[in-house]
Image (tube, rainbow, N blue to C red):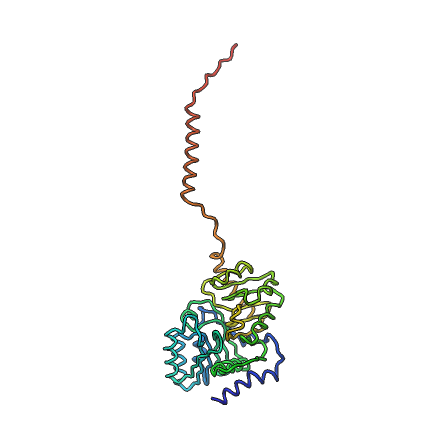
Length: 354
């Protein structure tokens, strides 16, 4: 296992430096990428993992989705190497179901580690056989898989998969990485602020689905350079400022973190807020792919269309009691007027003199 870790670290740190010039995006063929949208087809994550032949690496904030836990345990019992990294810090505390999941996985032979090196390990990433990486915003919890609106990318590229495997193995050992030199791979707190800033600096129409979009990210000024923009945010109080200043639309159960400008696409676990960029361990990727850009744009527009009516300002409501009183008053006035007209004495008609 030590040899595996050494090789993975070399892939993350040394190999990219010798092959690639540093860049904030990676051009990739669309036939190497597919999209998972929760809750529509999020169980595809389980289908991919069940096909593992040698190894699976997982890094996630929480792990409580029992079908996935069962699948990982089954893999280890078949001789597949499984590493799982979980956040040592969880808002509200680590749930009891997760402790149960950890015990089940360890008893089956999986390697499980809690990482305490960051405010939160907020990643949602899976690497299968060092050939495929699944990453994005879909949490492996009941709500994440079956209820929330999230986006993951499935990337069939061994070079990219091995870089993410190396990061996960490093986090498993609670070690640290100070630099990622592979193009387009976005890692908090290493380069996410720089790379996402570069993306938002590109010209073009901006489409964004971002669970948390706070001014603390320092990205508002870049977002405002896009006069044409469609921004969706999650139902959080802190997002009210984005709704007011950026014209964002709030959507219930939105957990996606996705940005599209032109042919550039970002998908990952990184929110646009200070902690996510600077204090958490987060993973994402920026790719250049016209087809994937169009597909995610369509998803964002669809979510907007499905939710826009509930986000439109409500028409002013008139109190029913006041309305009834006004109508009654008008009727009384009309009745009085008619009575006065019918009861007043009629003047005699004067006969003209001949």
